[in-house]
Image (cartoon, rainbow, N blue to C red; front, side, top):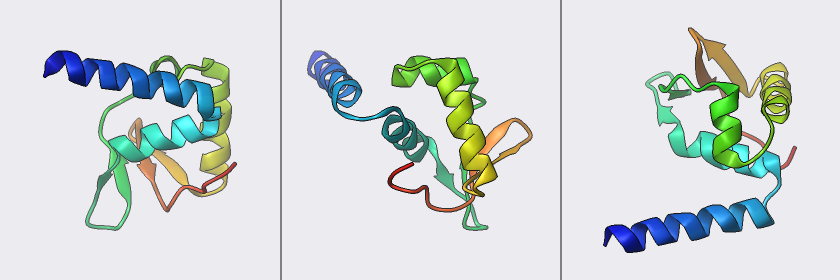
Length: 94
């Protein structure tokens, strides 16, 4: 069962890198890790560096920094005590 699970994860990872753009992979990763709060916002409790995010989604740290900055300026994302908070639903395309 573990081997099958790992093979499926590897297949899904390869598929997303091949078929999705960087923003779509970032959005999927943020949505997957976000936990709902009582205030309606969603918190990503893990303190992720831009490099760790870039390694996970298969792009450069600079691209992650640029996208997160754009999302923050657009009011979709906030950084509170070094944690990411999704303020509202992320757009489907960027």
